[in-house]
Length: 248
Image 1 (cartoon, rainbow, N blue to C red):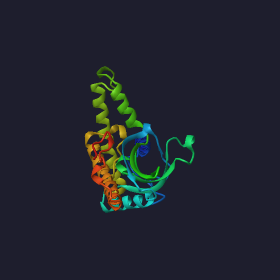
Image 2: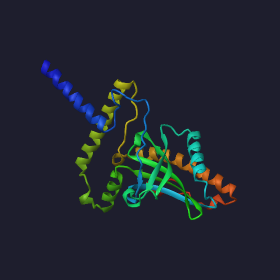
Image 3: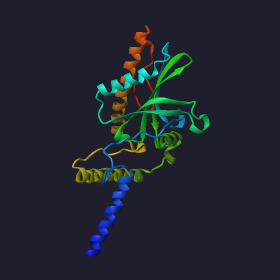
Image 4: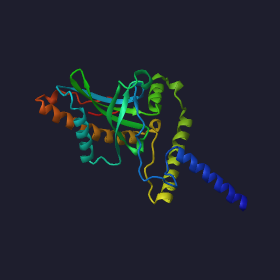
């Protein structure tokens, strides 16, 4: 009986460590009540961008900080649930190559359920104009690699056979179910189950798209406000973003 209890405890510890590493359950002991997903300086590189949108505002030079403040205010007023907003700086391109001359202020948006992604919103002076942009970064690069593999693959060379793919899906569902049960025991709530970028289902994609649409609309509202002040026609702005999501 003693050996059985010992092995149950060992298996439980190993399982807990595994699920903590995957970010699917909270820590047993929290040293801080504040959760910050975004203090590290991000680097916006082409091979990490999975969705983007931008526009220029003529005569908008010098309004970048005000624009970011208005966008942040708009996101908060829209009551987009379960997001983390942070102000930070980001490198536009490789940090070691351009040093600080390509470092700009951005608004960071992170959705706890999809923490492999970070949305960065910028308003940067460019040649007398104000360029307003947002990027979705695939932080781990796993979705980018997955899409590239699928685009390059033939039916015969896809990563999984039908049987193996079914096993993979079953194990992921079982893992998420178990994570929610452990969350329930530890915190009294099932909590947010983290979804990895390369594991996103159609339902995850549509849910994620709804979050990003809310952020995008807050950006567009601010752009329209600034352009109206400058007596410019907002209807000429292309509101459709580029990437794997259908956002406009």
